[in-house]
Image 1: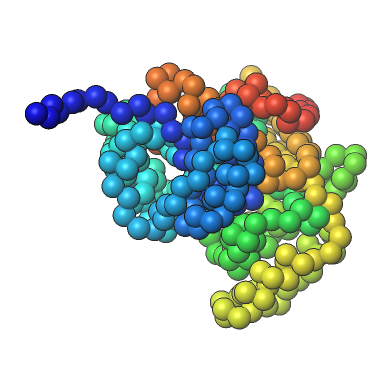
Image 2: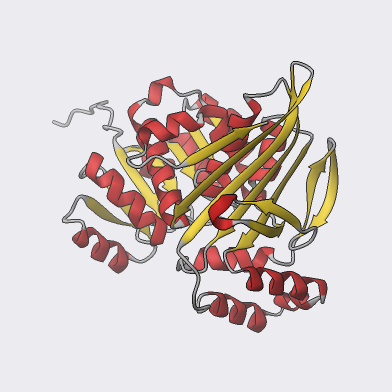
Length: 367
């Protein structure tokens, strides 16, 4: 005779999708030390996942998973948290997480996709699960720095975010492809509360990165943080700009944009060649810098807040922040609000700093 049991499966697994990639490996390694045997490096290539698992001594386990194909919610019944390190074209997998009551973290910088995930807020609430978006350096730390700046003001007028990336750091192919695909983008930003169309690598602006790095000319770029914080923090004017640690390469790219050369990136062979070329550029340092300049009012007087963060290896910073958020979500599941949120809606910069093994070196100047 067989008896049916209603024993609820233990929901304690962490799946890192893209877990054997550049950033995914670092997230897995950090979480594997905290929760050995609970972390799974998931992806389409089982041999890569197994090879990485062996390198961790089994602290991280391998899992074959293709998020472009339907994943039944029942497959996620033992999974408490998914950390997404690969880009997706639709929200089917996130919807499976919502139905399964599985928490979800995404490091994607694609705003079009993040906006689709926002639509799942009610579904996440119903299943008592939480999705945290904009987790990493940009978006992520940039959002938190803007939130921090707004704490010094009664009313915020404008926030300028600038990201400097070092050419000495070797980025994963997906990150380079995303960057190339954004070079010729036309997109909307908020200016004085109204949507305004702008172009990547247009509207150059001189940014002060401090005594060591000096002034740099940076250009508009379609990072998702500017779209998000304009809404979540109610800021009328927000922009994000990009420069590289090589001044001449940044200038060359701006000149190429003005000459119309970036329009050639629509041709697959030229686009793919550019992706390869960016991965082969010699020189540069494996550094990154983030600058936030915010202007507003406090007690009737104008206030300017400048925040500067300089560090080594942008990918390491993204992984560290993602692991810190994941640890917090995994340990304090019941304390989190249910639904879909961007990082600055749930966490402060100090929350993340407290969870990091090496805190970010942020300097703040208020005038």
